[in-house]
Image (cartoon, rainbow, N blue to C red; front, side, top):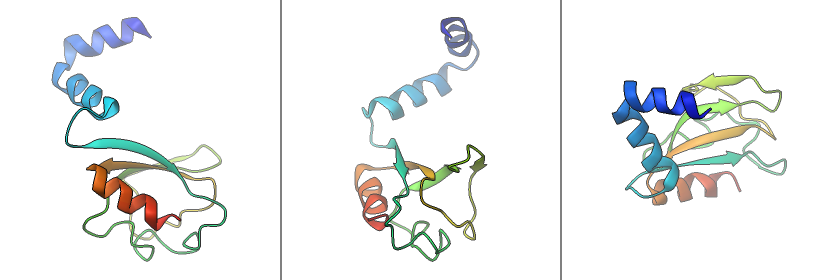
Amino acid sequence: MAGHRIAEMALRPAVVEVMDTLLSGGGEIGVEEMVVPAECCRKSQTLEQAGLLKSGTGRLPALRRADGTRDVNPGPTQHPEAGDLLVVLGSSEEIDRTAALLQ
């Protein structure tokens, strides 16, 4: 793992710097993982219908299904289900708004 990290730093230093900033929460934007709860009233709606793609919410660069399959850049017609994990990217306010929609 360390060797891979060193190679990434040598080959793509800007990408590594941005990812470190995102994951440490030290910048204006952050990244969070959110699990779709079983009691979520929006679980039968599409991402668009649930309001998860509207302006003012975090961006959803990835969705990992409970069975482990992944959707990169999920589209508006995707149906999040209980146990799915959403990767949310945005400001702290956008992340908070996204989390509120999953309650």
